Image (cartoon, rainbow over all chains, first blue to last red; front, side, top):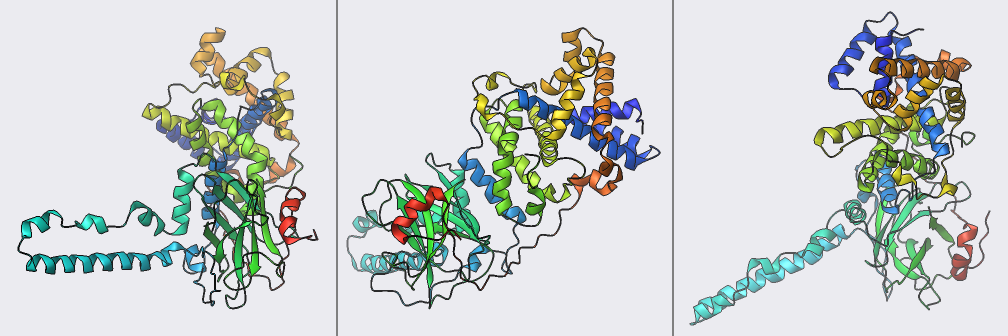
Length: 302
Length: 234
């Protein structure tokens, strides 16, 4: 099909520089009034592909620019991809897929990396209770004290009892925490991806910062666990430490299929994390994996 | 690259692992395209993020019978970059849209972008065009010059520049898609595919009852084996 020059010019200009709204309207009108709009659209696509191919041919002759997509940006893109193509469970919130452990903790319980949002409110309640009791006590004391002005000058303000910024941060859903963590672009952000072999379905990533001693892991496809029988445990491999064993990063459960975001909370400082692993362990986790349960997934740089 | 199994259909089907593969395979290409248009790294990063976000949405519309995945992704990237540039220019944050070649001078030649089949053919076809057409196309597509600037630089009339570009690109399109019978038979829906609604995504994967045993890549084997002992890779 031979397109009219006016249509061709607009199509090529659109594919090369873009069109103004009025030019785009003009092109739409011309296409609609053409004898075969479908054929015009087909040719338009082919022209656009041809122009893309021409620019690609230039790429061959031109070295790619210095640098590439930064790990932080890759992490953002992956996160967006997960959100774009992920269908959450009935709750619509991956957080709901993680359940609180009902297992009996061991005598030396390990750090639980369950969403802090379900644990933190207890601390908040405690803080606010202390604040309320303190104010009540203070009020009673003021009423009984003859030196009211003196006491008033020392009266604690309500701001003293407000949650700290960190606390506010911690009570956010873990996926939001991870977004903020990634948005802040830690200089030493380590981005890894889980390594499923044997065509298993576990996928996801690990994001970690040694400087901040915190990180997050995302995954889907991890088998649902019965917390009374076993729990998942995160391990951090630290190259700089002399400890023979990896550092545990917490224990968590998976109650539903779908996408999960879990914060990583090491029980001891990690100098230089290089790899992470998830194992299935006895309820409450273990200090050292006894190989009773094979590693479930491990991570590698992507 | 062109012989590799396409990743976009897998992404459209909800395979998150394909996202990593897509980033590995095409991240450099998209980055390169973005950097050519964005002298500022931050702007380039914003653009790349925008491109991939859009790519996930239109992944289902890719049809390998029409073009290679590389060319399709390049086309999507170009569309987004052009839109992005126009928006930025309207806000005054872009002063020009000519491509910044200075950024490329210090680059590593070993990291050249692998090109698609169409690109190789397009390059050959370009070289077969009359010199004036080649010049106008190169200045337009490779250097990002406007028609007016091409006219200034070459001494051609503005109308002549447009004619050369139109005729040259049309000739390349005709030759590129001449033998592609599948493209001739493609449905119209695929042609304007980018505006189609992505397919429904099935993520309702039931967990396997089998015990999961994952082996380690060779790179990581030594570290993990330190703690967990020997693991079978099968």
